[in-house]
Length: 182
Image (cartoon, rainbow, N blue to C red; front, side, top):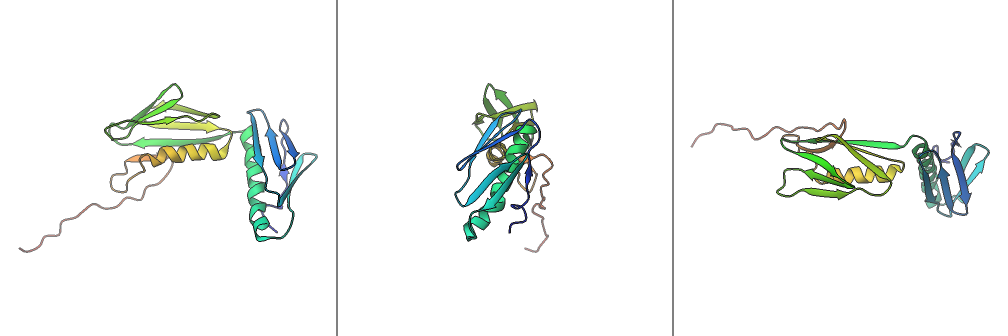
């Protein structure tokens, strides 16, 4: 039995969870999220608790049990609190700005790097080197943050690049000259 999957999920007040066939819908104060559940997994709502169970003992059903429970729990957290990822741009002259629903970054290339902000996400730049991504879908917030970071990953010598807030970059020593003969 999955340790994560067998735990019940408490439904807070103001959140509505509906199960129709293989479709789970979670509605709350911040919005509505939907997730399709594999047929190997059974989801049921009893009062103010969501229970996730396996339909059989196959390897796939065991693998999906805890994952499905975590996805539904993340949906409930998303419609109540929401999710946020912060990114920092580190580098001299490197910066970004919002132009409508487009994020424009200058990351040391001869061109700008543009990102269209997906629906359901909100991107704010309180400073030129700080990006704040918020939304109710944990996967979409994390994916968009990863795409921005991939535009210019932090490099290990000077630490320049786009990094997550609080991310620690392991720095390497540069080349060193060892005096030698002729």
